[in-house]
Length: 152
Image (cartoon, rainbow, N blue to C red; front, side, top):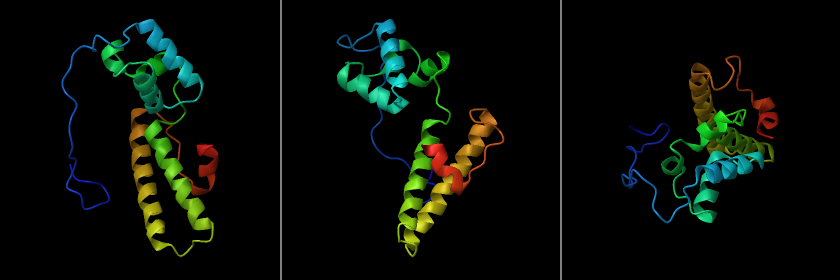
């Protein structure tokens, strides 16, 4: 599949090896792993940050192999899902950074103005998907002036 807003031809790079069980040196106690996930989620960490912390500090290379389910499904089972999905929140933060840059005396920065348009386009497209799948409310709309309230 081609890139959305660039001339790239698609995705390249290595893929993860096919593995059905976690390595024997890793932590596999499901109760301990779930407690760690819930503790870090309670601190306000995102799912990707939780996965990185578990990998680097607790010797859990892959939560899905150890638990049989993803971090996001563990959080949704315990009713700790964030208001907005992580990828949507990252796009909103990126748009807010560009808006701040343009308002901080860089109004003629046409490259970043175009990048803001592309980011907002991605955000609207992703919001449409999440509305259809029921992850966000169906009456949610993107408003540039209310973006700071949603991000903070």
